[in-house]
Picture: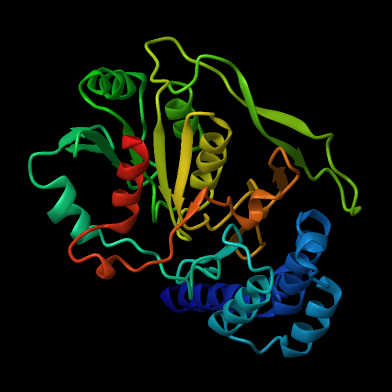
Length: 333
C-alpha cells in the first residue's frame, strides 16, 4: 500500500512538472514583443518628436535587429534603455528591479557654477534658519533662501515665515540651482505669495491620440495669489542647467513677475508632464505626455533663459559665489 501511494505521489509530481515545462512562455514577455510594445507606445504618445526632429521609425530600424529571444533581461534592459535615450529627455526612464535608465544630457557637459560646500561655508554658515525645506540666512542685508528639492513640501506656514522675515531685509534671493524638480504645487506655493494678482505664465496641452496633431487645446497655466501677506519687492532667482522639471516651471513663473530677475545659466528644461506605463514583464517606464510653452511660444522642454547670463567660474572671485554676489548688486540698485 505504501508503494502504491508512493507511485501515485511521484506520478503527480512528474505530471505537474511536465505540464509546467510544457507551458508556453507568455508571448508578451518575449524580448521582441516587449520591444514592439515599448516602441509603439512611445510612437503613439510621446510629444516632442517634431520639436526635437527625431525620426522614431529610424530609431526602430536601428535597434530592432539587436532584439532576439535569447537576450538576458539585463541585455534587453540596456537595449531598451539606449533606445529611449535617443529622445534626450530627462523625463524618460525605464525602471526594473535592477536598474533605471536615464538621460542627463540636459546638464551633462555644462558647468553648474554651484558649490554646495562653498554655499554652506560662506553664506549659510551654521546658524541659518530651517524653514521646512527652505534654508534661510541673512547675506549683506538680503534674505538668501536655498531650496534644494521641489519634492519637499513648502507650506503656507513656511511662506508666512519667509514673508515675515522680509520686513527685516532689503531683498530676496531664491537659489534653486541643481534643484532637479518635484512637485509643481510647491512652485506655485512660493510664487503665489509673490504676487497680488492672477498671472498667466505659460500654456500647456496634452497628447490625446497617436496622430501628430492629437492634442488638447492649449490651456493657460496661472499663478493665483493665496491668502496671507505678500512680498512684492525685488526677487533674484538663481538657476543653472541642473534646474529641471518643476524648477523650470518655477523659473518661468518668476520670469513673468515684474519684480523678479533670473541670474545664472538657463534651466535644463523638462516641460513635459511625465506619463507612466508598464510592460508585461513588470518593468515600468515614463515619458513626456504634454507640451508647455511660455508666453512667446518657446517650449519649456528646452529650458528657461535667464535675464543675466553668468559664465564666470566661482573661483575667479576668490571664496565667493558669483551668482549670489551678482544678485546682491542688483538688489542694492
